[in-house]
Length: 262
Image (cartoon, rainbow, N blue to C red; front, side, top):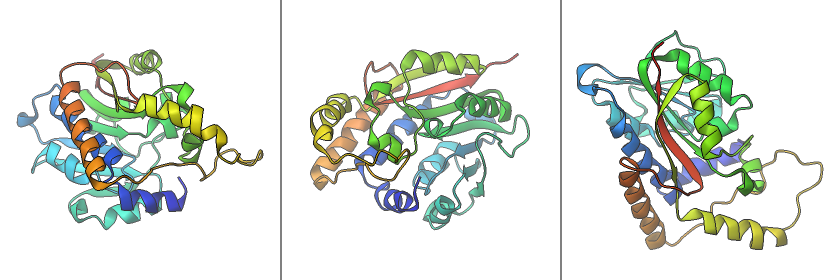
């Protein structure tokens, strides 16, 4: 992403409903990961840690004896992450998701939260995830859903794609994973996203024809505090529901994939 996008994310991701709600959903998925966490010191790798707002949630998930490694491709994002109060004790490093700088079977758990869509070769990235996970290790992930909702917002955030349920399920299986849970999330958003793209966006100024990936178009509208909190509470409910059953629509896909034993 562009530098000013990181600065804006750093300012918003602690309290803005989308980021806080996603954290609540992911926290529920982490509690649902199918292995006995009380018998081992958990090693967790967060790929694409961004500016660090998820560090408290991830540290809580692995407990006081766990070890958290957080990696991002951007030195600027890591600068923001190092200023986070919860960065103490976290191993923060720069790295490429297509060439993970770790030995085989180094981690019990790995998170990729809205990262795969930023990678040109998502299958290569999942192969690397598979390599560094221990047998029966788990990947917890989120990605944007529905390619037909592609817009200037995706281009502003340097996405390569949005995902469909069936194709993502197939990609995970082809990459050596058992799909333990896969669900849509952000279920209130499809009609709002459709309205933005079909009714409002066509009347916005057109971007230059020569622009391919740019910083214009990322849209995180400010909401009154009560509305922002109401959306967070709704997404907390979604997170509790997704732990037990699939939601059939939403603008995100989230899930747990477990490394198959050979």
